[in-house]
Image 1 (cartoon, one colour):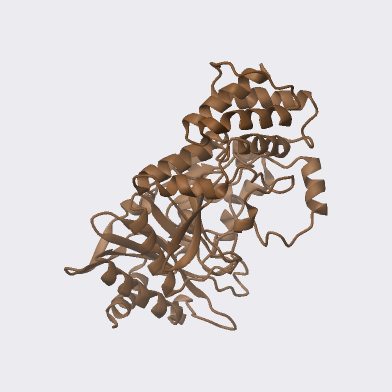
Image 2: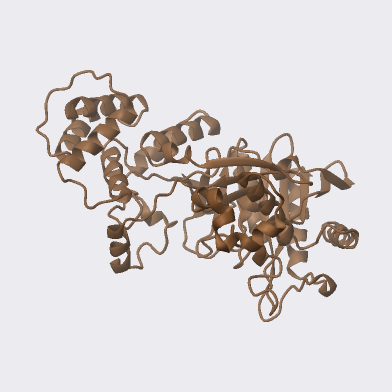
Length: 464
């Protein structure tokens, strides 16, 4: 059956356009070598791709070809196997560049990422999803169980691994790397794009939080920085990929993402709760529409012609960096800067750019952040609230799958249970996330705070 599985993969990956007729024998023979099998002549096979990969993985286990015990070693083997059928990076780039349009290109790149098991779609399907109707919107939660726990062997290898190359897990130099504890990147391919005249790369996320979850990262290892240049990069991106959104985590700790050391953004083909948020129109001119969103994390949506949207967004970012309102706890800086923004861009008939205003200041009473998850909710989630959560999709830890069946029995949830409504566990988690978003809002929902927010917006976007 090993030979029939190899034949099935050869046919499948040729149908994807990953190898030509002259590549077939070369790829088949390399696969036989990886499996330490004597090569045999090709025969048509009816085995489907997923079954073929699992059959060959089991053969590798039986032959003792895996480098260790655990899912990471299995993933590493699959990466090495599917890489045998992948074009080299320059060939991959040429295939994508010759696609008829951007949608055809992303359709193909995403299918390749799934079919080579780079995107762990089978595991992502196991994530738990739930929608919760808050008073301001319907928010979404997902309990992320797709990433497997590390085995003892993985932990041991990670503790002895050398560091320094690549500089981080987002760097372009990860392409082709393998060997646990590194993530499997033997079959990884990235596509170069230009944003605002700068070199960026496009790839998909192995553990997707939403449909066609992609990462756009700088070719240079440099820290996240939310500057006016980000606006031009985003509008360039939606010009090239009008069917995708692009978003940015903030560039400061507490309100930033998990990787602040490498400039990168997230995108894909999905809508989020914030997209359906009611608006209060502040200005509606021919070239620019400005609306404050009825959303717990203070947000404004700009839509219209590209130049007008870009100009207003840049003025808002610049003004927010220096904005202070001590009576609301907002200080632009103390011994360090505190104000920054999340961004979300789309393109339909008009350009659309949503800015969410964030502040990461701490004080003695709020060591985790004044505008961060309150301690009462941290039993559910303590980590940073990044862009994807700020726009309404919670990514909750896998431990909740088992813990939520025993909330009443667990000591750590005792105080939390006193303040959440009586409801099913997923409803309680949804309520908690809806409250976390309120905690992270800089301008709260009372009348005085919202008036101050509108005053800031009007002065900022009108200031030419």
